[in-house]
Image (tube, rainbow, N blue to C red; front, side, top):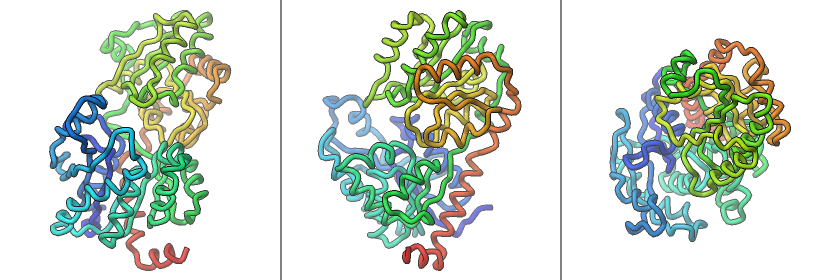
Length: 409
């Protein structure tokens, strides 16, 4: 049911734009699903630095992002906030707030938003906390993964994050693990709710394996292990490759396909190539690069097993997407992974080491799986379900009795 009386301002630097159409897709999906249930505007600031390629292509392209866009009927504003690449990161939150304040003031004149819905703890959550205080509205912050798993351990980000979480009226965590970490900062457990991500079943659903492999040009009779995600060292791709190398004798037709874009901070490609070379399977490890979301159902449907050997996680949508396409998953018990792969009928949880991973993959490749059951499990949580849960919790924050209780806590 739509609540047109609830006016939400979603605030995030993790949102696609004309120059970065694949940026923050999971944030976009949740926000747009929520926009179907409430009145919503999006403010998605982008960094500003004099147009140059000295610091890479990213900052050059930021300058070309339009100030306003429309995303499937939802207005999106892209105010600029000043940054110094690689330096002065301790003030990114205040700079983000300063760069966005004028934009929010203009929006508020025509759209008197009731609450700021921020995504990512730093700098987004910090800036949103400053702005919520300035405009005297409640604040919700969604924590998603590395913003808590990594940033909260860094001495120069930690004080800011703890401050902003303390200011929030509601914190949405994508997994129970993230909630537990947030609570250790002193936040009352009653202020933290767990709302995992979802999927769009119209995009992610099973396709006949033969047709999928033919479309992608893959061998019809090979055994295929698929992994998907940005090529960051934390995702454990070398562990996957080494585990596959150990199985090459048992499965001489085994191939590993990794779909994902390079990561500019911690590029895993050199380690992946080195592991494949050491294991003498370089010809059977394929780095596919980023793929359009519309083609991913073919990759998931073409594979025999999905593997995510990650060492840390928030809520890995790739697991839900893989299962929605009927693909069994092998992954590690970190972040929201145990909540996604919550039954041996849909996958296997194992430690993030080569021995455990090779054993789990061997089991996954030889077991007869009920792919219809796996698909039903993966498709059970949609973005509309997620959005309805978010709407209900955001509405609760605006209840005066709730705000009195939260303030006393």
